[in-house]
Amino acid sequence: MRFNIKNKVFGKFLKKFNFEIFKKLFFFISIFYFLVYFFLNLDQISFSRDLEEDSIDIFLSFLFCGASIFLNAFAWKNIVIWFGKKNIKNNLISFYVVTNILKYVPGGIWHFVERFNFLKEISNNSLAFYSILIEPYFMLCASFLLASVGIIYSKLYIVFLIPLIFLNRKLIYFILMQLEAFKSKTISKLNISNTKYNFDQRIKLNSFFPAKALLIETGFVLCKFIGFFICFNTANLENQPDTLFVFVIFCLSWSIGLIIPWAPGGVGVFEACFLFLIGKNVPENIMLVILIYFRLISTSADLFFSVPFFMKKFVKRI
Image (cartoon, rainbow, N blue to C red; front, side):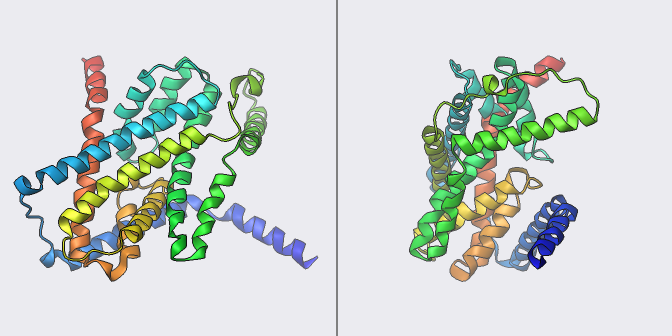
């Protein structure tokens, strides 16, 4: 009896608890945390770099950040294929790449909106919506999978393999069917006309486990890390912590930035988490320079490959 009462109380608490406020609060705390460290170390921070000497490193970092965007696009294409859409042309990849910059727009959903509108034209609303909805989960699974190598430091890192268990056809179908049931109830209560269709005809998962898409997403995270690590080595010549330790921290920080929707592109959250987790292993003033340089390079890569999208939008308005 006591157990049932506790469950009911906990259930009511979860319903009343506003997770959206918690995410916003976490975002603003992260920004505040980063700014505090920035101003405390302002007199020790130096952005003066020999661009001629570091030009190769900057270019390589930019190159790997750019490559990660294309790998992410290939992963999305394979997610769409896994959801049942075949005979996809490469314009799906190019459209993903050019809309990538929209993730930095406040709200963090506009790149999803553009991709949904594009994908529904060549498939159907259900496939477009659910393949876009699950894509961040693939990225999270890939990042957690790589972070699990931290098991050499602690056995607790094994928990990062748990999300992979849910990435299979049976559980994905179950979750999608629950969402469909919820949607149907909402539509009926609002008295909105809804055309009935066979859900299984719109979503056909091609295999039990999406190994190819997950493998490409893993390559995406690795490319992103290499771009970051080049910046790390360029600005941090004297203090060199264990590379694997830096890699695990990068994966965890990037994952946290991904799951906070109020952080466009993980801005602020990734940096704050990395600063917190790296601790005193790297001097704060040097770490701040590394994080800012990497953010500038990765955002520049997003912007560079998104220029065609903005040019197309501009031409349409003329």
